[in-house]
Image 1: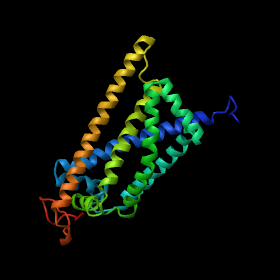
Image 2: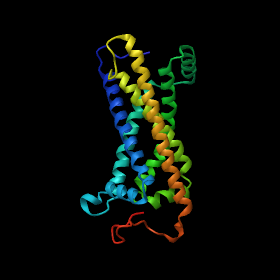
Image 3: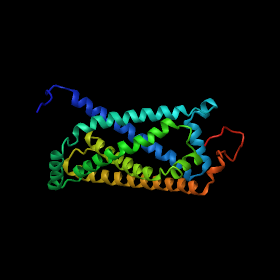
Image 4: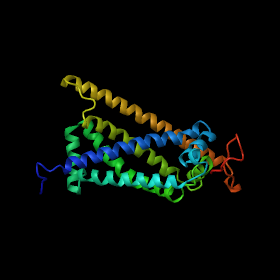
Length: 249
């Protein structure tokens, strides 16, 4: 088995790149769920957010291609992040069995969290790819009605439900492990480190729970619109303020 030279900086650089892409993706996920949850305020709020991301308030025109470019960028980050992370995964069934035995014998909380992160990361790669492809191919199909139609009429809600849990749990654990890895929550004395780590874990669980509740509530609202709105009429969504504004789905 070949090992890197002691002075080789490649592993450190890859670790930094993995951390950087991970934190960018975590911030995107946090913002994306908040954007989607605007539907809980009103359809107009979600409409406003859609126009914002399409550049309407900067150019007074709709440019859905912005959504496509953002989706391509995020997918590229996921590929890079996953490619780097895979070097730490068990590369064979034999190594996977050793890893499982190691987790059971060690009985260490953070090691178990890493195992969960592997599982959610694997699921997220495939589930997110489907979602991002839809955003790349149909960037104009975002809005109170269009999103609800895709979720219900195209039966995408099971995928979004699973994706929600995968990304939130993966991102939550990932940020927690990054904080520990880069020493952002360290204590000078070892006896205080254990308490700080317990506090950090509590914050992590709270944030994960909060975002899951927000995500599930938003998905439920889209499903409700999907089942109650008559999509056969081909109606496009308008704000209540003006029926002459730019139309979006």
